Image (cartoon, rainbow over the protein chains, first blue to last red):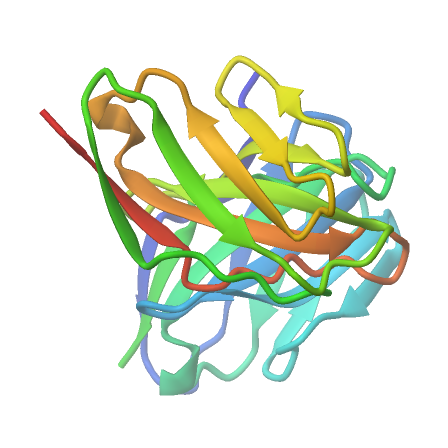
Length: 113
Length: 112
């Protein structure tokens, strides 16, 4: 049981480049989330999804896009990378019931130079 | 979601119980208390959660005061692998409120 798997683990981008951060879960969770964590700070919610075909904005969605075509996958797209997007990105998932905990992947460390 | 207050750091001897406090004096009746930890730079790891009753699982115990204004996470026999930042989060478990608000947490160091 792999849980939440994120790829790649590390990436360096140049300003203006685009890339997709991959996230997949094998727990059949309805809910999936993308967070970013800047150095010494807590996590901030970027986007979340309550099921295939349904996504919604979190606290800091600007500069990102998401899609949810399957229950398992929830990719995060950066279209025009900016230095402010240098961060660690975490994907998480949970069951549909409101009080169920979120389970996190190990993160993608992204640097924009 | 209610605000939480945690000490910035704590030490605990290996093999002893680690007791991590959290104050959430403005908690409302439908808000749950969650505990997560983050070891080094890994993803946050869920530990335990509760509403008003004390809870125990294979990792830890959660003690919530009767007035629900504070709680304590107990790691019964701390090991070096328990060194991490521990986050206490209060959250209404409801549709449309999907955000987990992570503060700065308590940095727990287990001393050999």
